[in-house]
Length: 338
Image 1 (cartoon, rainbow, N blue to C red):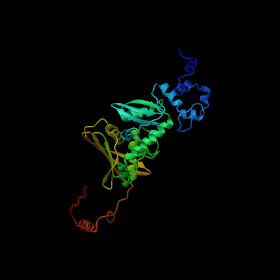
Image 2: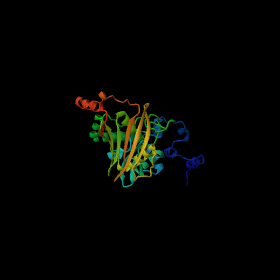
Image 3: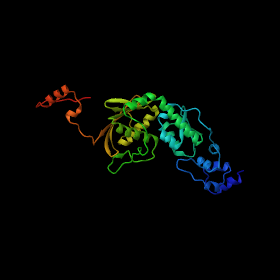
Image 4: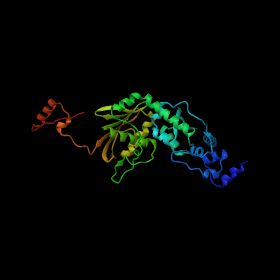
C-alpha cells in the first residue's frame, strides 16, 4: 500500500526523481522550497550546502529512486579510447563519464540520472545502449579531471606534434555554434549548446583556422578515424576518435555543405561559408568512399588573405631568376603543380 506521504505527493502533481530521493531521506517539501541551487551546482550539492543531507546520501537515494546502481567513487578510470570522442568541457558541464564498453552496451557514470539530454547525446555519439551508474557530483568531477589528465599524459607524443604545429585543440566556450547569419555564412563565434559531434566539428574548424591550416583531413581506418591538419604542406595528427564516430562526423559535414547524407557510395563535393572572428572563410568539401567509410577533406580558403608579390614567395634567388626570365617571354605556359 502506498504511504500517506507518497499519496500526498502524487495528489500534488508529478514527482521528480529529486523529490522522490529527498522524500526518501525525510526532507519535507517546505525545506526543499527553501533550497537555492547555484549555477553549476547539482541539487544534491545544494541540499548538502543547506545542511539537509550529508555527503553522498542524496546521490545514493537518487540512484535508489531511479532503480540504478550507485558508487561513492570511481577508483578505476576509463580507457583513453572512450574519452577521445567526448570533449572534456562537455563531460564536466553535464557530469557524465563513459566508463567501459562491452559490445553495444556502454557503462556511463552520471551525477543526475534525470538529465535525459546528455544521456541521449552519449547514446547517439557512441551508438550504444547505456548502463548508467550514479556517482556523487564531487567524486564524478574528480574522476573526470583524473581521466582526462591521464589521457592527455598517455598521448604526449600527439600533444608534442600538435604543439610543434601551433595547434591546441580545445572546445572554447562560445565557439561551437553553427547558426546561419542572414548572408548564409556560418559564424563559429556565436554560442550554442549543440550535440557533441557538432561541437567537435566546429572546434576542428575553429582550431584549423586559428592554426593557419590549409586543409582538414578526416580519414577512416578499421579502428579509428585519423583527424589531421595540413599546415605548411605537412600533415599533423590532431585526434584519433573511434571508427564508429566517423559516419556521424561525415554526416555533419555533409549537412553543413548541403550534400546528400544518404549517399555514401559516390564522391561528393560541396562548399561551406564560415565566419571566424570576423574573417570570412570558404571551405571546399570533398568526400570520397573508401573501404572503411568516406574520406573527408575540407580545404580552408581565407577570402581576406592578401595575395603575395613574387619576391614575397620565398623562392631561392636562382629559382626566382628563372621564373622572371620565363615570365618575360611572349608565349608559353608555366605549370604550377603540387
